[in-house]
Length: 166
Image (tube, rainbow, N blue to C red; front, top):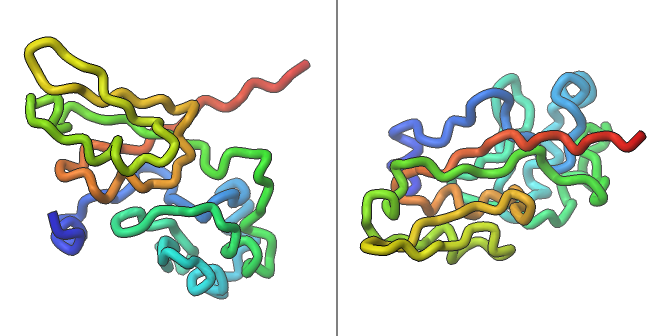
């Protein structure tokens, strides 16, 4: 499906808080520190970052994925976009919903083929096509699987925070 048709139909509007650039600080602090200077937008080599609501940068996965190059963080003069690579770039993973073609017995593996870290694998099913399974411990949140899904069955889900050690 043509990505421009998806935009026309309004697909992929994230629920809840918007996707900010990778390693961004908390949403409240981000909107407080971000000057909306747009320095991060042209710095992104994949064109993932767009001007979003209120003029703040957002990651738009409808046509790009994140390579985690850090160029947006280097361009950010305010520190709203951090670069602590010991932390996860985003606190979300993915979930594949029932509208997935494989759940409807139609062969499709586009999400698994595009996932560089093999977070999406296909489990054989007797009498049907293999179904995708997601391992969110492997998922980097790059978003490469979102745009190519022909049924927009892949959604982001919040990951449980890592418990603090005593």
